[in-house]
Amino acid sequence: MRGPRAAVRRPSRARARARGATIAAFVVLAATVPAAAVAAGTREVDTELPYVCTLPSGQWPATVRISAAFPDRVAVGEPIRPADVTTTVEFPAQAVADLAATGAPGVRAAETRLTVAVAQNDATAEATWRGTAQPVALPAAGPLTLTATGEVPTVTGRSAGELALSAADFAVDLALGAADDGAAEPAALTVECTLAEDAPNDGLLAAVPVGPDPGGPDGSPSASPSPSGTPSRPGSEPADRQRERAPRVGGDTPGGTQARPDAPPCRYDAGYPAGPMSLNAYITGHANVRKLKGAALIPLTCTLIEQGEPEFEFYPDFSGGTIKQHSPGDMYNGGRTWSPPFEATFLTFGFTPTTATMVLEQTGPLTIDSLGATDFVFTSTDTYVRVPLVLRVLSLTVNGTPLDVGPNCRTEKPLASPEPDPAHHPGDHLVLHGRGEQVTGEPATGYLLLSGGPLTGEVSIPAFTGCGADGERVDRLLTASVSGSGNYVKQMQGQTCYVAADVPNPQECTTDLQPLKIPVPER
Image (cartoon, rainbow, N blue to C red; front, side, top):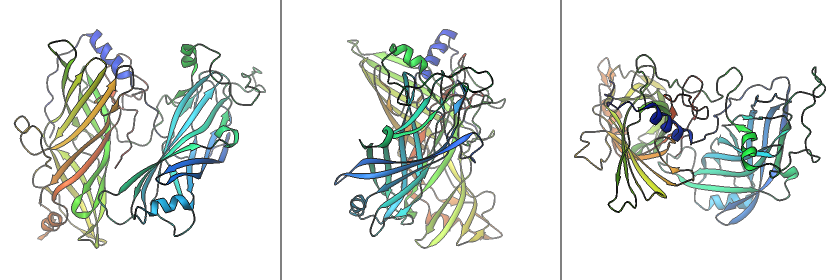
């Protein structure tokens, strides 16, 4: 069922435009470009760079190898879309000893972040290349190698001249433990690395000419690069002119649609029309199943939100005040209020591999309540997302044998979280909490409704009912192996798209008013 949408006063066009400007203040990168075969007119780059990485025992050298395919040349305003991007990091034996000292036999998951400096003429920008590596065991001797693929934003030159992309800082988030040890909360370690001073060409990955070929049909020359072959450093133009000419990270791809990874549709339609303050956003993350000592990945799910009017209340001495906001919304998947199906495999009772395909179905209103406090310089905001969700099992395989669960296999009531305000929010529902902080004039950190961020909580999974067919019931099997309390949940909400703006922000919305930002699940 669909939760009721609270009535919201239609703001004046001026106020709506001002809100749109607030939303537009959060700038995000374009999302990933799927791997593709190398086409004609491209050149492959394979660069090996020295780094210095900080581990618990100190700083150790590491080697990062980056391979990708870049176009030979692009026109002004045409996005550069790296293809087949792979990042491989090799940690030396000393670093492996550091990891082994934690007692973990391997790396269950690794997420990499490579900062890429983008420069053209006197202007610069930064992009972040994200990747995910497969689980690996720690070697008994020798180095540890992790190979990652993942998000690569587009980069667009806004003037003629060579556009250079150079590797800069590199980081790896490690979840330690054997790939199949089932630990609900594996040890975590973030390894920060900096480019070594002796890195060749200051980490240059590629220099792509932007503009017409001097030998092309029109005979017009492109801007000349600096004598060193790379763009000159900022400083020869005023700062506002540099920003105006800076390469754009993200934006439109040829054909008028934004480059981003495959994602389920997330747009308003005739069955769910947009309102005056409508937002949409993706959310994804992990939910632990404590009994099974494992976690399930909740897939990208669309949420449609009607942002509520903020309520301001000043302190008596006007030294600051509080800001309250209530926003209703819904999960939305092809006209239904549930998540896309997702699959999870666990070892039931510690030894039997069991694979279940499930969906989370919303059975009541989704609400987002924020309360902030500010002294006009520093603002902190606590946000609670509440939604009643029933877990439905669509199919089940135990030790390779399919079991017919029937059409009505689900938890007998909604998932339940500890509720901090039960008098005002009775009943069983999931509660997720996010906290955001912001200093005036600086980017926000943590979670805010508009910019997104991490939301965490704890949930109890009720007993199952209606599971089975032809007289063979599996309710008790699912209840015994899955149901229980203390299951940790961490979801990541992406940047919202303000669909009601007079001119939607292209850094937040696709041309058909879907969220541009695709969040990455974190543990």
